[in-house]
Amino acid sequence: METCEIVWTPISSSPWGSITVGYFRAEVARADGASEIGRSQAFATARADGLPHRFDRQHNGYLKALVDQLVADGWELTSDAGSNWWSYRFCRLVA
Image (cartoon, rainbow, N blue to C red; front, side):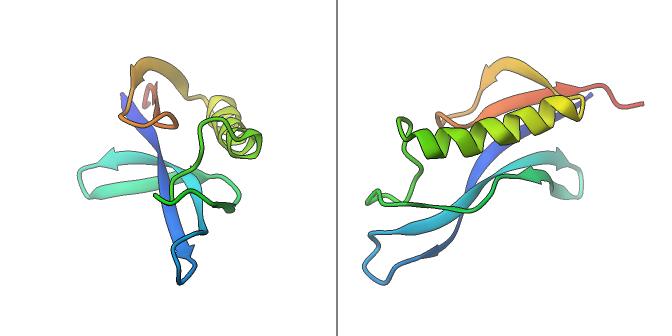
């Protein structure tokens, strides 16, 4: 059984810290380290903490597209969630 979790990955921020650009990424934990299996389009967030906003429709749209991609690839959403609102966890059987 493999498991994966969606994480937020910041890639740049403005010099004043008011805008952060990043993306959601799906990671599988493996013995040799985490492996990326999918990612959303990069987008900007204007929160002071540099995190995506739970109630932003655009941020949710990018997350939904990644979730839909994982499900189409055979991953099943679990009831176990990570520590952030975007931290969905998935599992799938490995042949």
